[in-house]
Every structure is written in C-alpha cells, then in structure tokens.
Length: 135
Image 1 (cartoon, rainbow, N blue to C red):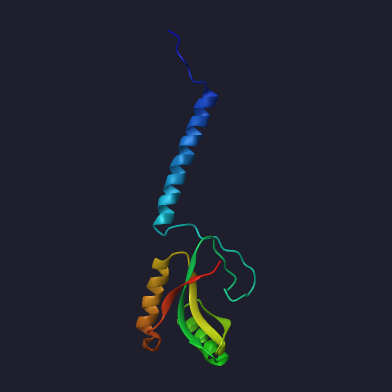
Image 2 (cartoon, helix red, strand yellow):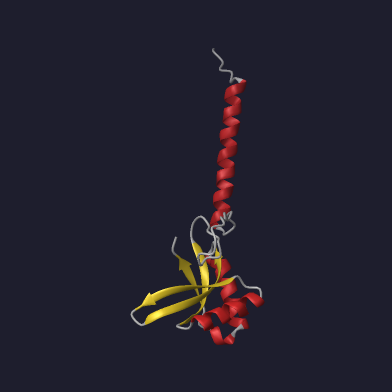
C-alpha cells in the first residue's frame, strides 16, 4: 500500500488558503451587519466634505431651501451642535435649491440613528429623512 505524505510546502499553502477563507467569511459577516471598513480620501471641498467611501453611502437630508443664506445658517447651527453638516445645490423646474444634509454613512442604520437624533433635537425639521447618495 502506498502512503501519500504531504510535504511542508503543500501544508503551508493549505493553511494559508484556509486562513484566507476564514478571514473572508468574517469580513463578509461584518460587512453584512454594518461593521465594514470605511475608506476615505481627501479631495478638497466638493460638497461632500472631502470624504468618499467604497460602496453605498447614506446621508440625512434635513432641509431644502431656495435661499443659500438659510442653508448656510442651518449648516452652521448643525455644526455648532456637533454634526458634520453641508449643503448641495441642484436645479429644478422651479429654480435653484440648496439641500442641507448631515454626514455620510456607510449603512442605513447609522444614518437612521442620526435622522432620529436630528428630528428629536430640531422639531422644525421633523420631515428629515435618510437619502442614498449617488456614487
């Protein structure tokens, strides 16, 4: 009877593959539960405070106004209270508008927590909602 004996090299490769599979499974499970790694890059002030993440991003839209001054004032108020606030501009058939937003979150659960906080703290903005950002 011929016995097959595994050499040290193949044993090492097998152990590395097993480790990669285990780490991949753990990473997948963490990402599914909202604990993924957020990668940010700094690219200047382009409306998203210089951050961009891999995958989906959510934000909390607090208000929409046709007045840039009102948008800037609200952003300042939110920042004083510790929120990562900013505004984006957009054009529609009705004219030029400013969307005041808070943060960029990699999962809906984190954004919803901030949405609830904003609604509780600022009764005037009870219509705030979580918005999926375009990549």
